Length: 333
Image 1 (cartoon, rainbow, N blue to C red):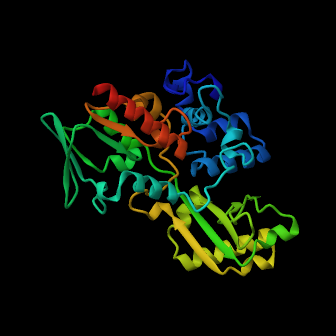
Image 2 (image 1 turned 45 degrees about the vertical axis):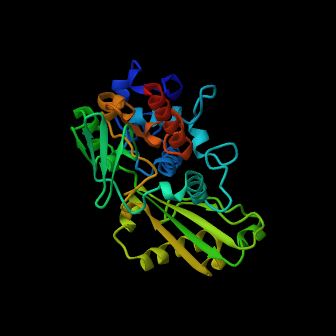
Image 3 (image 1 turned 180 degrees about the horizontal axis):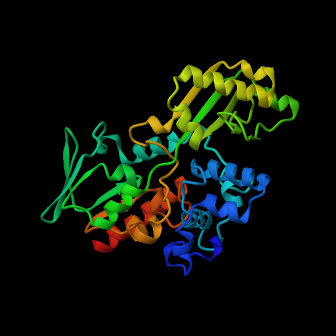
């Protein structure tokens, strides 16, 4: 089904209205009712979208799968969830924050305004006045590279088209967190284990070995997804750690209780993310408002991973959306 879609306009498919009228859960109940199939597909969907299958549109899900490729390679669900040869294969030595740090160094720190979240974008004649609480800049073009729900918290003058506003009202963020347990060694490797878990119970139901290749210390990373994240969002961190420790002991034995340090990251509670990894579309959104994801409004452009044709939800998609917007701006010069 995903291979039939036009990644640039999935809402143009002859069955798009039908596919956008139901959730993934209703499709699963009809097409894959066996409990084992429901378990595996639900775990896979939660790990990719940080949602429950009942929340997202079937068309949106198919479009997301179709985007897990490029101009010559069709996207597949397997590519989204696989490690070897898939989206989970690679990590960046030193952490992904190095991408932002190195880019900032190339741009020049003096050219970046820090601690100034944009509150208002106003068109004044031929230029835009972009304002934060304490600073303003004037620009010929403006790129809003944010998730749709966060972009909607900026005030725009004149108002954005109604379709764009309705889109941002209807696309929430997934609910996601990560737990990192640090150990003296990656002890599970001694037992010949790769550290990957898929479980049908627990606060953490998917884990990955995030230790350095040389095994100088151990890091076990666990995803907290969808309903479990929403439940844990209501708990203090020490209770979350207690629950996750029990999960890790159940998966890897009593040595998993010897955690030296914890990092619990709850993106749901972060001001400038409010969830993740991307905004998703419930039923009826893409067919009604999908064209507004990428459409510029004057010289106001929209980027971000949700506004990409390929690898929506990933850094690859975010970069591609930036390249698209850069092309739009260059064509106007």
